[in-house]
Image (cartoon, rainbow, N blue to C red; front, top):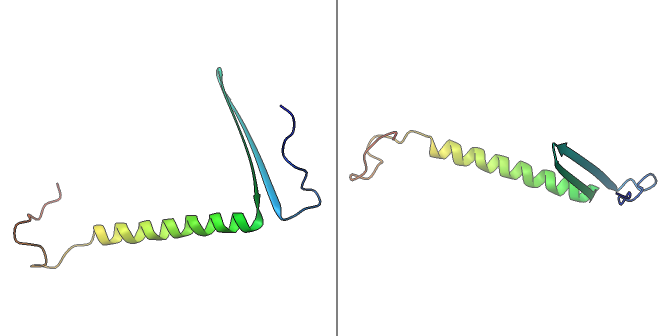
Length: 78
């Protein structure tokens, strides 16, 4: 496979990565090129996702005060 990633030796605003995997007869290749701004944007999206998941888990596992649950619902773990 020819080298399709651009040469970034002079341009520091672009980052590139290449991955090649071989497992038995299976082969997989991946290439990525991203700018510094894009890398920061992806990092911000990942951080926001992790923070929002933590909030959802905290709210969903909290114990409700007595009498806060509707009368027809049973208090049960399963």
